[in-house]
Image (cartoon, rainbow, N blue to C red):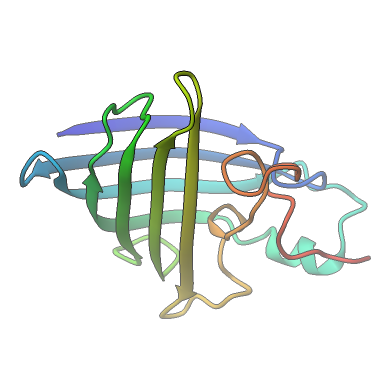
Length: 176
């Protein structure tokens, strides 16, 4: 059982705006055995787009107004047969997660994700990691794809998803 509290300001997602957030997360994990765990969590987050550039397109300006409070409950089933939690050399890690936002707050959506990593040793100092991710997010209730907050949208890029691209660089583009 644990909790996290955070305040962040991120300009990584776009050159046209900053994303400020203040959040709180409560979580609990239950181990079924040495390999299988269940996690439950609740998060509350206040999202605000700030420092919107005058060069931003009209569409981006409209979508930057999607500020508000996010309240979400989620669960995940995790499997881990790796030989080390911090620096695995062999084994398999998998997580199937789901989240529903709309328990109070200003937004309503469903998020699903399935992440797999397989580790195999190459030499005494080298490890090859295969990774496959599938993520799905769909608005529900009064939230539409246009009113979904910018901080919750799915973007790719950076060393954790697509190397060679700047973080959050692969996703919707707004032309002027």
